[in-house]
Image 1 (cartoon, rainbow, N blue to C red):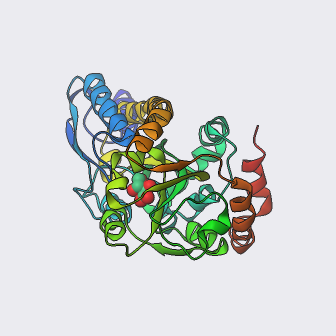
Image 2 (image 1 turned 30 degrees about the vertical axis):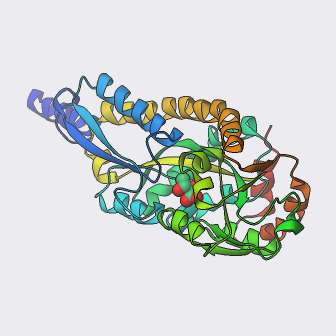
Length: 329
Ligand code: EAX
């Protein structure tokens, strides 16, 4: 009887620790990828994550950072790398993620969120957790929502204050069906493109403009690619989930899994704050680089022009689902 009990106990313990060696001796070295450079808030957050994980596992788990598209042309390719286990961790916008986990596209609708407080309320609640959990169906472990930020329209041709000013403008969008549809509805001429191709395409005037948060524009010095006009449109909020390969996550003992998840969540708050706190100073720096920053954008004209995109995707995202997010307080 005693032997049976001991056997049951040891099986339960093995299950609790994720069926691998005990937490105290598990070691790993992970690769963390990203499209952005080390000065971008993605990588400031990633460095914090690296430091905390190393400290809290007494050096058992170390993470090497691969910024600036070193491990792939763009976020879609690198997300595939996470699925295959070639990349252990990826900080990415939700741009191409709808192709992996369709439900995430609900966050890509224009003018869905009122402000950062609204964003945090939704992403850090049950809706956000469900969207993270949905990635499990695509062989991806989504740990937490870090932040890219509210996206703004930039171009090389002239100041854009209301949506009509940009009619026919050739702009790059992420490889995202909702964004593509929204800019088409607004009368622009959108082209989906992975981030790694954007700077050259802007420089060569293959496209006239793009749209991204302040930090991406600033960190990539897009004024050097001829983007002389920045319209503070804040037309969509861009979350940045930190994704992990199930191969790396499932190999972890139970306690280390909990540590990785709680640390990713803790860094989410830190990373969003540093992104937000730095935005105004970066915008002023951008203006000093000779970029005309239009702050009094007629956002209502953009919101009205992009509104048809909600109807276009009403089969996938019900009015009730959208309103639950929009009206969250
Ligand atoms: O995630 O592709 C984009 O425009 C993204 O915002 C950028 O890669 C940062």
